Image (tube, rainbow, N blue to C red; front, side):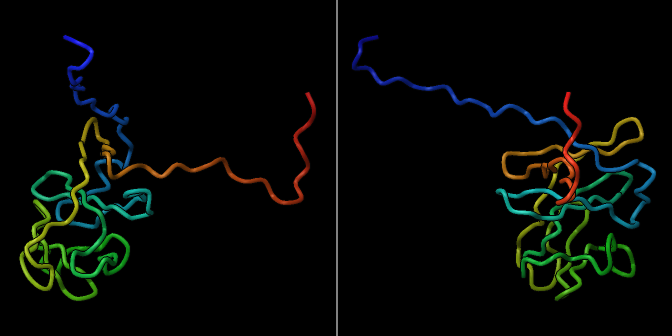
Length: 152
């Protein structure tokens, strides 16, 4: 290889981020209430949710395709009255809970954004991706007039 030959870089995978705990498995009843948590999508705050369908946890960003708003009727309530579809509380867009595919209403042919989840040893975890990351919380701030820590 001469100095003038192009150098082809091999693709480099970003290091996998560790999984993040969501909830106990027992918190997810079949076609029941979802559990939500905060994430960052492209650095912007979003909510995600996980619910159990056909015995398997399924997770998505809590954002309708029609209008980018949170979809739950009340916290954790996403399913229609028959517990068959994820239903946006704003305009009634309906999504198949097994894959997030739009099945009716103003959401077109799109899908909800999936969040990778796994259930293991009675716990549910989610896996951050290149686009969806965990929220990093700083240590609790001190009160404005708090005494400084003692000198060592």
